[in-house]
Every structure is written in C-alpha cells, then in structure tokens.
Length: 181
Image 1 (cartoon, helix red, strand yellow):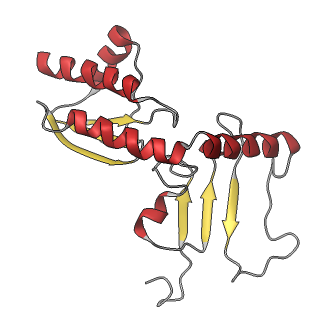
Image 2: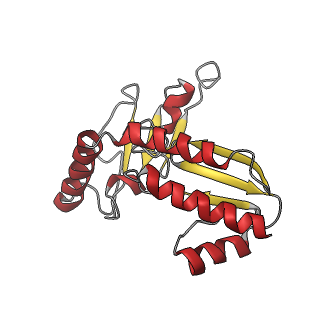
C-alpha cells in the first residue's frame, strides 16, 4: 500500500530489532520491506546506541541525517560485539524456540485469556489486572515483568540467551500465582 500511494514505510524496530522476535527484525515475519528502519535497544546490550537504515531509493547527502551520539567508536564496538554474540550463540533460533516453549507451558492455564508473542517478545493477557501478579513475581520469585499499555497484560521480554529451564521456572511461578487468584 505504501508503494501504491507513494508513501514512505517506516518500521520502528527500536525494541523488536536485533533478534527479539526470533528474526533479526520483526517486520521480516510479515515479508515486507520498509524504506526506513529505526533501531536501538538491542544494538548495544545496554550500552546507549541507536541506528537508522535507509533504502537506497533515498539519495544520501551530507547533512541529511544528524545525530547526537552517532558514529562513536565505543557504541560501534558494542554493536559489533552484540552482532558477534547473536551469531556465535545462535540467539535468533534460541529466541524463537524458547518463546515457543514458554507459550506452550502457559497455554490453557487458568486466568490467561490470550498470549500474543513473536519469539521472546511476549504479552500475556490475564482475566484481571496484573499489578498484583507482577508484584508477587518480583517479591516472591525475584522475577521481573514489564508494564504494558493495558492493565491486564504482563509484558515478558527475557534476554535472548535465556534457557528453557529459566522460562520453565517463570511459567511454574506464574501458574502457581494464577491458581491462587
């Protein structure tokens, strides 16, 4: 549709890029090709770095793109190290396999209405607001989940190198808490 309407397709891969979804970029699951890709969080494994990829259909010229921290050597070294680890440890495949495994453990559980996920980018919709569940996971099990824009959704974004035994512990803890509610 963007091509048909001469519109620029911009993919926001700030959070979903660098393997989070089980593919290098989440848009690859849809088989589409953006004109611009914004990326950040996964690039530096905690080191502040961001990047933008632009289609060759845009003619690059001096001054076209500005950046506060762009091109610094430490950020580039951090990103290269992240890319090396992603490849060496086969983290894209791990993200997909472990995400599938976690979802298989949680399907058809009491008080879970829906699970939306791609790789290790997971939203678990509960039958009720999840604040108390989140608090119990942290206090009783030392497991941190994120906030989502809806009050009933647990946002789960484990590290790409998470092991199946780790997500099994999470699933067991969550199931136990949900049984008690």
